[in-house]
Picture 1 (tube, protein in one colour):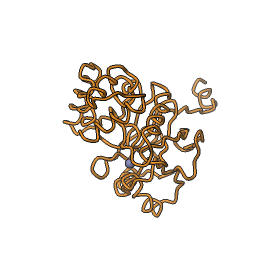
Picture 2: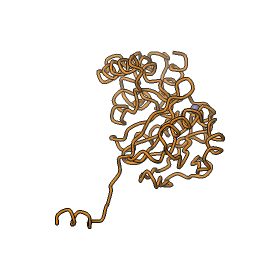
Picture 3: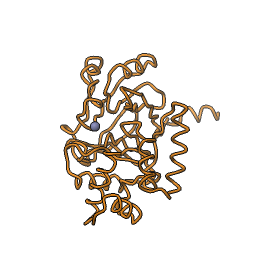
Picture 4: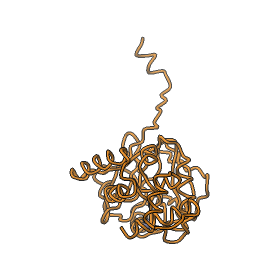
Amino acid sequence: MILRCLVLQPTIVKTNIASIIPLRALKDNYIWVICDPNKQYAAVVDPGDAIPVIKFLESNNIFLTDILLTHHHQDHSAGIPELLAYSNVPVWRSSNTTEGMTILLEKQQITLKVIEIPGHTLDHIAFYNDDLLFCGDTLFSAGCGRVFEGTAAQMLHSLQKLKNLSENIKVYCGHEYTVNNLNFAARVDPENQALQQRLQQAQQLQAQDLPTLPSTMQQELSYNPFLRTNNPVIIDSVSQHCAGELQDEVAVFAELRQWKNNF
Ligand SMILES: [Zn+2]
C-alpha cells in the first residue's frame, strides 16, 4: 500500500544541483561544463578549444545543449565553429543577449541571467543566478582582467555590478591565475589574514594540480584588492606605490591595475 502511494505521487525532481565541471584548455583556461544531475546533458562556457569538450562529451555519453560565451577573445571562443559542426546548438553571447535576459538551460533545469560587464572587452557579459557566476576574464580570484577595450571607469563599474550580486554565489573565472594574483594582492595588502589563508590553500591545491576555483563572492570581497578599491588600506598602499594623490576610486583602480600589469 505504501509503495503504491509512493508510485502515485507525481514525481517532482527539484534540481538546483546541476554539477559544474572544469575542463582545462590551452595554457591556463577553464571551460566550465554545466551538467544536469544525471550527467546526460551539458552546456559549456567559453570553449576556447573544441577538443577537450568533444572528448568529455564522447567519453561520458553526454549531449551538448548550449554554448555560452562571455567575450570574443580567441582563448574563449576558438572552439565554437568545431563544436557547432559537431552539434548545432544555440550560442549565447553578447550579440544575441541583453542585460537582464534570462537563459533557460532546460535539460539542466537551471536559469542564468545576463549581466553586461564591459572593460576587459566591450562585449563582455557574465552569466549568473543565485548560486553561481561565470565571469570570464572580468573577475578572477584575487584579481581582475586587463582593461583592453574599455576604460578603467567602465571596468570598475562592471566589478561593482558583480559585487552587488549575492555574496554566496560561487565564482567561476576564465583562467587559473589565483596564486599569481594572490602573490600580487599580498604585496598590496600584506596584513590581510583572509588573503594569507587563501594563498596557502591555493598553493596546496596548485601543488596537487587541482583547480583553485570556484571561490565565492564573499571570499573575493575579503581579499581581492580590485573589489576593495574603496578600502583605506588599499587606497594607502596604492597611493604610496604611485607616490601621488588619487582623486577618486577610478584613479585608485587605474593605478592598481597599472601596478599589477607591471608586477
Ligand atoms: Zn579575455
